[in-house]
Amino acid sequence: MTKRSVAHATFTIERHYDATPARVFAAFATREAKARWFSGPPEWGPAEGGMDFRVGGRETSRGGPKGGTVHAFDAIYQDIVPNERIVFSYDMHLDETRISVSLTTIEFKPEAGGTRLVFTEQGAFLDGYDDAGGREHGWGEALKQLGCALQQAA
Image (cartoon, rainbow, N blue to C red):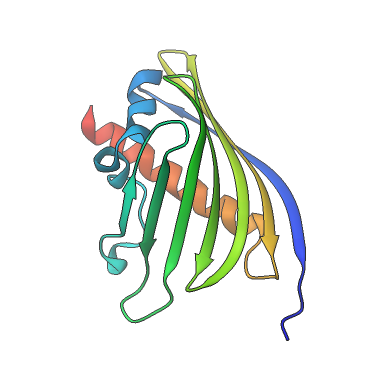
């Protein structure tokens, strides 16, 4: 039998982008725009999933190394204020094992010719499969890719 545990943690990541809040927000609002920066390593290939960007809508993404563990993201949008904030809850699975459940808030704030993005996650990390440090690192990398995508689109 698996030993059950839960570790609670909160982290915040802040980034500045040389783009308007509307442009940064738009990078989260459609599957096509988000696919430009929200993905696994290139060797995984494209992820499968869908996106219904509205309050109560879902976003799913499944992918992983060929023949390896499937990483699954399943989110529900709880609150959306265009160009200001997005709040969603999500869980992560490795194959069929739920490894975490989180509440995430993304704020888009005008700042010095661009946008200050404030990303806050409150997570429950289950049974030792993941932790806040690993998740913070992963989102940090994704937000770095967001910056690259915004620069390429400029």
